[in-house]
Length: 191
Image 1 (cartoon, rainbow, N blue to C red):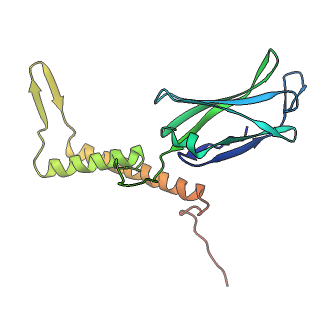
Image 2: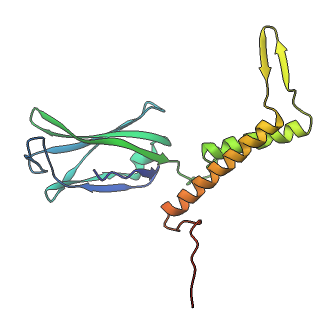
Image 3: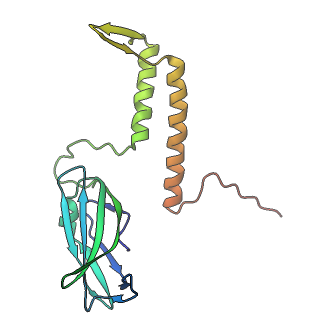
């Protein structure tokens, strides 16, 4: 299945799928079968169904900008089901990531935070370190029968180091995915 693994809300998305075969080796092609993609997310009660149009012996799919503009950012799950009469056959399933659209009209509200979860966690740890150093946090306190203990400075510094390493790995993977190469590669020229 050729559905993209990542899309941006508000973009027109197109892909084509080739004909397939069933478990007995019989052809599943567009002149006899209808192929539909069912998309759903667990982050909101959103769903969409896309029916393929004939393209050779396969199918072509289009999600309009209006349709994807209504998609909430996050993980979406899909299932491709071919039908012919009373027969139904799952040809594929998986997930895709919907990225939030940065386009807007009028005022740019609400605020947009494009950081990954690891980057957000790193920011929170760095804020906690600054607060602890400035003397604004208590190590441990008790309210009624509840007890709360905060991180110690050395634990926060270790956590910060681990999160920085994870952020660096994410950035390297993003560079590689965007075709900009691995920043860890070293090239040597001999004359």
